[in-house]
Image 1 (cartoon, helix red, strand yellow):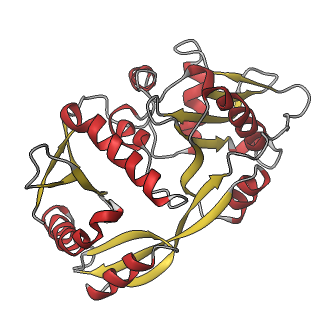
Image 2 (cartoon, rainbow, N blue to C red):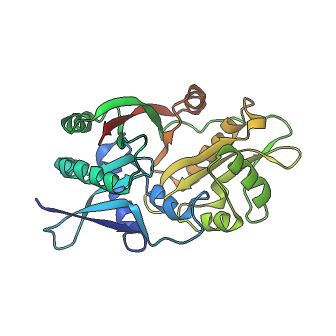
Image 3 (cartoon, rainbow, N blue to C red):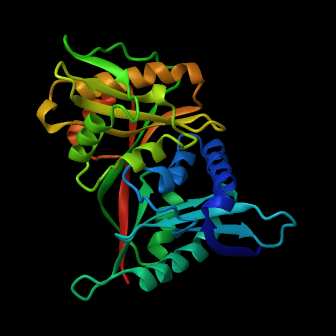
Length: 306
């Protein structure tokens, strides 16, 4: 079978790429690869760029070349830090042996050496045995625990957990709430520089529902914690992303309270899954999500020096 690789175009490829990720989800069961919302987040994320990008150079698409109607069978994302995510349809897993050299060359062309060395890493869930075997063929070695994929069983009742007295959980109202909203998000994520324009762009994403963009409001009107439950309108795949607690309010159960409310609210939209992909691999994060009924899978970084 012949495959064709090309660059990803947001305007032309978004829905077909999202449908491809949905196909992976249906075929692989608990092995959640990524979510359609991640592709939208490349443009609409609250910590993104104000300037609109038509093409995203980080992403590449692989299609069946001999098909009358091109069909996406793989998608790759190479971040600036050299970490790659590879999404391949289970029926076309042999394509990995073409994809890996291609992503390595992409890294050579776009990456910057550190102390004369250029490295690349691939994120791999621990249960992906075939992928690990193929990466070994190309000289990759298993590195450190990178993150967790958290999955909440759909038949598990929503958690009944409330914030301490005096605090309330409510949805965000933009642009009215911009000041306290941006303050808590920018504080938790130091790389973020949310502006009014970015905040309003965020609300235009297909995955965004203001009823599911939640905060814990303190008695003084500041925001102690936040979560957005992103739900793709077509596939109904739901993800708690981002999640955070202001440093001044940590250790008081606010993240648990706001996430619990998000899980309760998303039920009426009949989600096909509720996940947190790429969750921090820390004891605190693992404890929080376990208390909400999530089950985790370890994701390791497989690394190589080019």
